[in-house]
Amino acid sequence: MKTFTLGNSNSQVLEMIYEKAIHKINLDDKTIALVRSGELFHAFQANCPHRGTSLFEGSLTKEGEIICPLHEYRFDMKTGEVKIGSCGNLEIYRTELTENGLKIYISAK
Ligand code: FES
Image 1: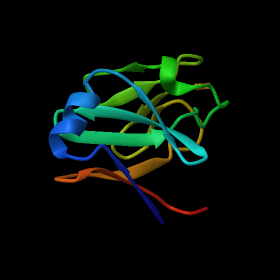
Image 2: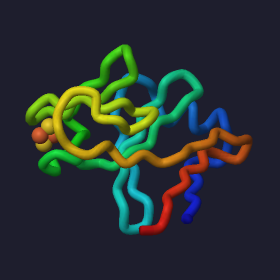
Image 3: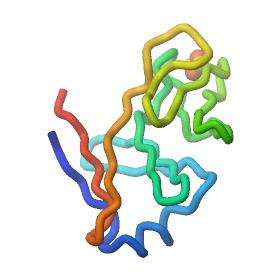
């Protein structure tokens, strides 16, 4: 497990990562997607599990799903579960907002 920290404080993270957007975050040699919803953060793989399309051009729903721009499969950003479509689930990463920034936990493969 690798832990990454984004920003230096709780307030800096909330200022930097605005809502209703899919942020591209580079962590060492890995790029992930990050979406903020209030003080909750959803971190997940940057490419669709179906055919690998970049999810940065995807869209977000009020129900907390991301819709892939290519075939419009839908994934729950909290659990990674595929909601509409037939492919594997989205890989998600645990996050934790702390006084020292946003921790993102990436499990080793
Ligand atoms: S590539 Fe994402 S739904 Fe097909």
